[in-house]
Length: 228
Ligand code: DC
Image (cartoon, rainbow, N blue to C red; front, side):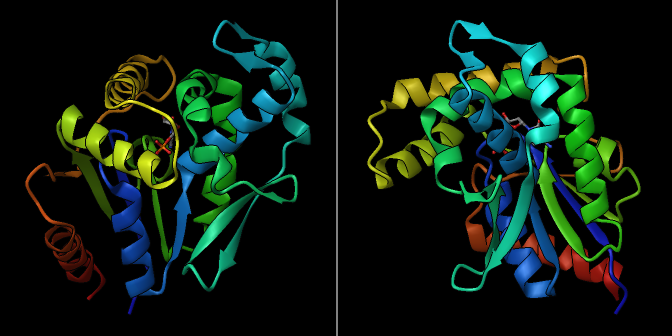
């Protein structure tokens, strides 16, 4: 069977990574969570005191980009690759509210995008990859054989993210989570460099009313049609 590139883009908390992970496991492809890379750079900036709610030392962060090493290592118990920031597993830490609040600011910076896009393109060089994010079908892999664009109402998405926060015992309210989802939608769709837009040849899936299994079946079928 030929190997293809699968790009899954869409708004935050549309369940892109769940579908992408499942699809990669089923097809025996590599799964890459590109959002985790932007989140890990944000975590680095927080640790180095280069960003907070009211300040962002952008130039310093750009200067330090060379010191940021991001590596994905496969965790066989989990069935997917976790992200390491300079040798430390930060897969859980990058999902906290603080990183979520600041990541869009970091993801707006062209120098940061350039570095991460180059790394993403290297990871997908030999195809057989499922990558999810915001600009995968438009910028990272414009020639991807299958492009999916996922949407769902902001309330549905905030509910999903809120449930995740609760599971992890984070002290956040639903209103705060909804605001964060709406804020990130706004920044992600209006930024100058690589804004979130649906690629012309992407297939849109609104999963507000679909179960996970239904979504998976839909995407898996689309992939098989191309692969076979
Ligand atoms: O998918 P996520 O919510 O973990 O992504 C975190 C942030 O990173 C999101 O607000 C936008 C940004 N992002 C991006 O700009 N480009 C990507 N390819 C992936 C994520």
